[in-house]
Image 1 (cartoon, helix red, strand yellow):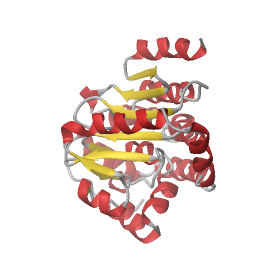
Image 2 (tube, one colour; image 1 turned 180 degrees about the vertical axis):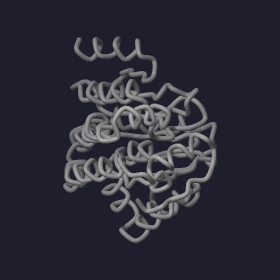
Image 3 (cartoon, helix red, strand yellow; image 1 turned 90 degrees about the vertical axis):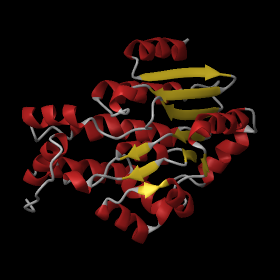
Image 4 (cartoon, helix red, strand yellow; image 1 turned 90 degrees about the horizontal axis):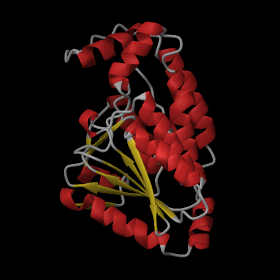
Length: 269
């Protein structure tokens, strides 16, 4: 079938795993050696997995990750290579790769449960917030991280964070770049449940399997009623902003400082 043919291609890449069992599609980020940082191969495979999850036999989706961390966002090593090649096109990945993933998740009519071990940062947070129910561990943490490297936001965060937190708290979270603990995330409404770290996947899987066995048509209507009408516009604006910011001196200096484990000095240009 079409789903199985996509599945075989995803398996070959080994950075994203996809499986459908009893109506539950499981998408697993499998680049644990890089803390599931998002390089192009992983983003392409993730977009294909999301597309595969739209198959008629899928009644719920579980997104999770291998290793200690859910996703630390963009692979900055790969990003530096893109900056060196052409700063004007380095941020094309937002429109070409990130936006299709988030749009694909937003288009899924079935419930999406996200199991979040460890750190959930940047685009990883955008992916998590594109789900409906999020389960974190006691040691999980959340951050936007974009302004730390002189960028704004992508992966729908300018929309999803405001919806989750309200504009004031979202602005503080994005501008200050603070790391939020699992307890804070639960209090703020970023996550649905916090459990022991060793129980994150099992808890999320139990919830997702229950949804996969539930009244699918009712769930579709629930999601339709609470759909985010402003997400598409937000994704387009984010892509434009990141393209402009990706060419600034501050962004390049911040990325170099991050990779060299030094402190960035911003000049405002």
